[in-house]
Picture 1: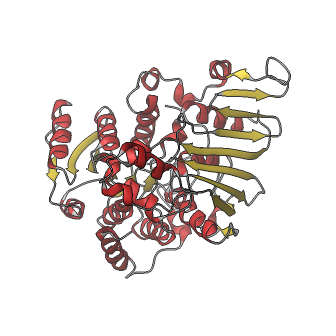
Picture 2 (picture 1 turned 30 degrees about the vertical axis):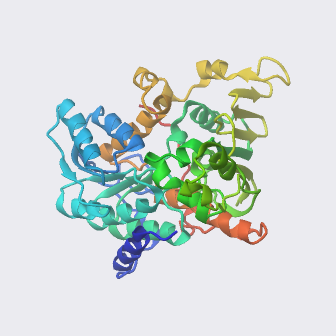
Picture 3 (picture 1 turned 120 degrees about the vertical axis):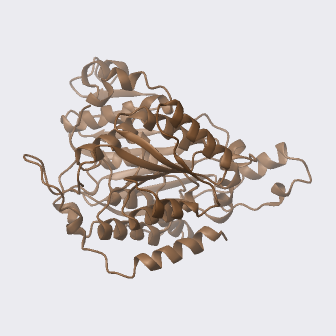
Length: 448
């Protein structure tokens, strides 16, 4: 795609690369707490997290609403190319009893001015994909922690740029993967940590969501997302399903992604939708799309586990994030949500309804009434991911997801494109930790 953001990113990357990045091990050396591991990066505690938010459209406004409801947060600045959205976010802050945030709406790169001028602790972005990395790099360059909607990046070099900037400036760089906080995925994680599923051997996941109407809309994601379908062919959106499985398989924390193979089917769905729904003189009907309607990817981990990942957004289908986490003693499945544990389920060779396992083994993060009542934003998981980020920053804790996760989960996209273009050739997955995965402790089960 030909977009000015790419040029801006290259300029920013060149500035960041002027000094050599610190070795990966240095990012793990942080503020020591008695009785806590020191092998994951942590920063000094922040009593009140001052936030600058970039991109306050659909998901951005959801996050702003969540953040304004969390103790210890101050929305200091808001940036968007649409002045009305800036004004709406400012009004939300004032309604929540906070001072009116400074507004930045002088064009696509005004976030750079915000990062340079504002006293902020965290810059959070929910912009279109091509702007994620430029915002993250600008934030860290100016001494701010950084957080982004998914995917964090869609080019391999951009993934390395995030890692190197986080190491150089010693700042958190977090991809906010909300599905890691969904109730089913956290139940599966809890069962894994309790050993009830046995040794984890296989995962299945995907993003299967009919986006045809959204891609052709004249607002929101329709202004930019369809362009990726024109220019690229692979799994464009893997992290919703992949993130929770990666955490359960200890990726970057005792394990790593090794290689993948990927293939795409024909491209038919967008063309058919345009022919049926758009006027005959619409220029959109003349567009050509490279993205195969269904992409299938297989990933092998360093420990030999397999992960099956699908991407299906151009065909009619009910929404599904197909989810399977399978071990030697049992498995958890999503859509429909169900559990089977050998010797523990009610009947041999029969699924248990997930509610039975929620009642007995719900993840501690989901036992809070506050989370159960937070229906705004995908049933509560968006609030939970925002709350956890702020909690970790305020208490000087390692974040649940770090820059190495952001890079490893996001890089799957460009690598699938390479594999598809090379007749499903196996493609090695970079080790963004540079070997630290071998000694980094796995995530534990945390609570509110």
